[in-house]
Length: 442
Ligand code: GDP
Image (spheres, rainbow, N blue to C red):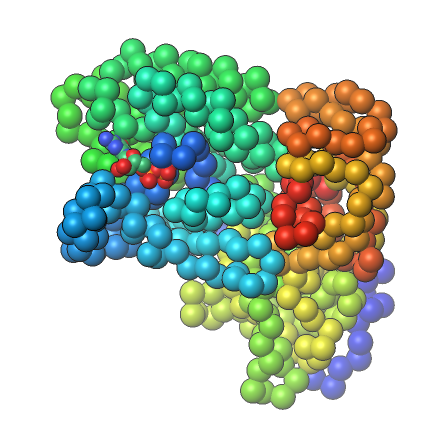
């Protein structure tokens, strides 16, 4: 019983109004929050597309892009002006902590979007893993030019898509890009959609969760508005932004689950005894007056106030980034990467876990660091019971001595400390500064 952990406090707990937060949330006009990652072969047009999204949604000024265009022209790289937008705006939020996740933000009237990772980076895979391990869905950018997309499917595209799959990302929006270069050929778009769809279902994606949109990131066609190119009149589907808005945040499914918040910052407040935590609500909901616990320390306290977008709130739900003030808890019990949860259904704490992960390097019993968002802990791969089929999950080899890069395996991880982790969470294994595997906790 979690309640027994509550300590007697001289500060009276704040009043709990007993709100039905899920109902309040659904009745409110709160925008949903969705985060995604962008993947695809180098030069498919990822950065250009993201620059275009930020421009169309007024996150950058046209004149800023014009300035980049002039600079780019001087260096003979005019077409890269939009890509520079992304590089310049990239906020390396989590620099120096664990793995860098760069973020960019934009919003439509219904939805707040976070773009995870930095497509401008050439050293792409580690960023992508960090981004994908938090993403609700992915945009896969494919270059529609003959030769280019076939090459992409064999190369990085395949690697990225397998990684998304092993991290449990289920929804994909395929942006078939550079349609301007092939005269908006419907035949070519249909052919690519069919082949890529077969490729994706072969890797275990459900076709109903994959959509295809013909675009030109460079010209902005079918991004925020329909293309004006008469040759593209055959396309009647949604624009990219419409498709993004239709995506359900995976957090929507998390609303009624137990409350969990990953702690990304800890502030000691001026007021005596109060501590404020910042982070993202991973699942469930929370309201003022709720009894909460920090794991792994097991210290309990109450929610005093909640702030989102600089405004005080009565409650918060999964997917929202908030700061939360707690009554009477010593910050000595709280570290970045810890989990704030409810006292009646707290997250369990342990040091031994089974994961199903894709290997990027050779895996065998060896020392590793396990990362989940801001949480990281040292330990080792204790045993590898099996390698698994990537699409079906069926056992291929039992007790392999070594797992080859590209294979998926079930592994038992023993950490040196107890950490709060639970089934279904996405984790990354690192060793010697490199990402060696990524997957899901079983
Ligand atoms: P990334 O490596 O995937 O980030 O690709 P970039 O965004 O850097 O784009 C690679 C090249 O393709 C650049 O020269 C872009 O200008 C060009 N490009 C990107 N999108 C389009 C497009 O829709 N149409 C045309 N014609 N060129 C594009």
